[in-house]
Image 1 (tube, rainbow, N blue to C red):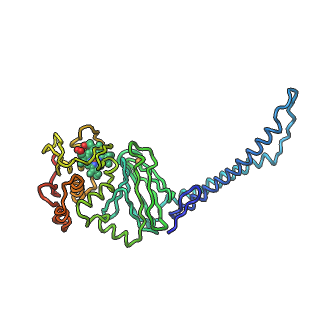
Image 2 (cartoon, rainbow, N blue to C red):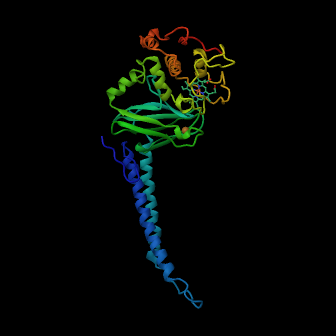
Image 3 (cartoon, rainbow, N blue to C red):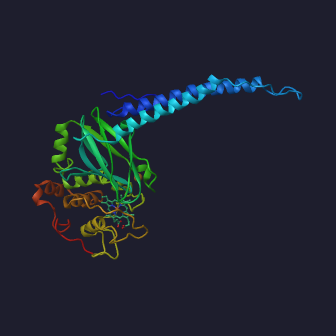
Length: 343
Ligand code: HEC
Ligand SMILES: [Cu+2]
């Protein structure tokens, strides 16, 4: 699985990358040749016709017809070549094959969310089968973002209230970085994700298990969501406050205005499903809502917050690891799946 880039460009990991690169190199090489030629004659004539004495007079210049025709015709031809070649590459990179597998992509401040045809969702991890065309149907919930995978030579804006599409076919299994290339605010530079190109079997299994999270104990599910759902861009677990408050010391901390006056399971649940219900003192209400998190996901996040605050024991893990229908482990402290958040 060798992936080599060139001096300028990362490896060509999608089936259309070579077309874009060939055009890029063509333009670079032609430009360099023209640049050298122009600079050479510029310097040469600047020297040759430099001012030598006050008495100098310009000489008559007789235009050379063929020379003049050539520097009109050759550059024009080059422009046409670049146009038609570029147009062809643009069209083939822009129009997905009919059999492409479609995945919905949502950009939001500041994470990428992916939704698969069977309802599985994931954040920051885009799993795709290798060797099959994948079409992304993209939009944004807030501002302009831009989905960029350098190794695929794929880059396209995700725009609010509108769908845009890109497609690619990954050539080799592996993990490829996604960046946001539209300056979109505070955590723009951290708005990345990964494309995991895996074989069909692994992909099907990943899809079937809802992103591989179905059989994790709640606290581990929470830990994985902390990363995957993008909570870590704003919340630390080590006491450092970021865009949002740290989760260290959160469990059972005083939260005046909430139902019980402390950060319990209900408070945390409400903070996630309806971020503006309570605004933590000293912070702005900029946390996005997470409509795609399931009840089990939320229970997992609560379990994880309890764990990092030393309130999660092995017994809780055992109870939580039990079959999915005995979900909400200790009934008194974990939100039950159908409990409505207190408003
Ligand atoms: C864009 C930044 C951002 C992201 C991403 C984010 N949050 Fe928040 N979160 C905040 C801010 C800011 C606050 C404080 C203001 C408020 O209460 O809405 C907050 C508050 C909270 C609180 C209450 C904390 C307290 O000390 O009272 C919880 C719980 C919480 N977030 C959970 C989550 C979870 C779980 C995720 C991931 C699924 C998440 N947040 C993702 C910004 C974010
Ligand atoms: Cu962005």
